[in-house]
Image (cartoon, rainbow, N blue to C red; front, side, top):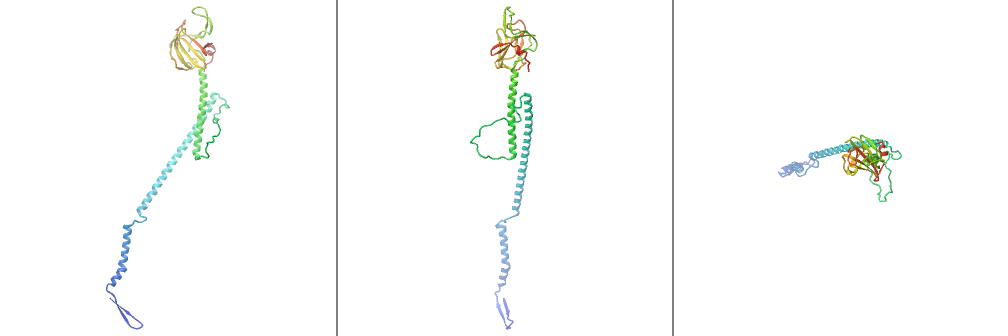
Length: 310
C-alpha cells in the first residue's frame, strides 16, 4: 500500500510505502478491540460478580418491610386489646368497690354500730416506725398501673373491714344464739316450778332444782339455746337425759325423755328438736324436767324461760 504526499509550494510529490497489513491492524484497533473490551466487561458483570442492587434484592427488601409492618400491626392490636382488658378490669373493680361500700354501710346500720366506732368509709387505722432498711426511690410504675394498684389496695381494705364487721356480727349473733330463752317444749304447760315442793313419791318437802313441762307423750323437746351436746343417755333420776353446754359457764338439762335424737359432740341451734317427751326415770307422767346450770350448779330457770327468743 502506497501513500502519495503532495507539496503545494514546491510542486513536488512524495510516495510513502505502507505495509499491506496496516489497514487490518487499524481496523482491529478501532473496531475489534473496543468490542472485545465491551463484551468482556458485560461477561464479567453477568457471570463473575452479582449486581449491588438487583430485582431479587429489592423484592426481598419489600417483603421484609411488609413483614415488619404486619408485626407492628399485630403488636399494636395486642396492646390495644390488653389496654381494653385492663380498662374493663378497672371498671369491674370500681363497681365491686361501690357494692362493697353499700353493703358495708348497710351492715354497719343493721348491726347498730355507732358511726364513730366503725367508719366503713375510711381505711383501718395503722402505723409504725419507718424502717431504716428501706431503700431510696423505687421504680415508678405508669399512671394506669398506679390506678389499678390503688384500686386493688382499696378493695383489700374494704374486704378486711368486711371481715372485721362479719366477726362483730358473728360474735353478736353467737351471743344471741347462746343466750338461754324460751321454753324447752313446742307444746305443753308448766306443771311444776323451781323451788321447794312436796315430793310426789314420798310426800316430803324437797327442793326441786328445775322446772317441769308436761305435754303429750312423744311431743318435741327443743334446745333453748345453741351449744354442744355433752351428754345423751340414761342417768339415775333423770331417765333419758340430754345435757347441752352453751359456753360462758351455762348448760341445760332435759330429762325424762322417751327418745333421744342427738349424741355427744353434736352442735345444736335454738329450737332444734333434741328428744321426744316421755316418762322415763323418776316420773309420774309424760313431761320434761328442765334445768339450767351456771358453773355446775342449778339455778332458777324461770328468768330464762320468760326471756324472749330472738
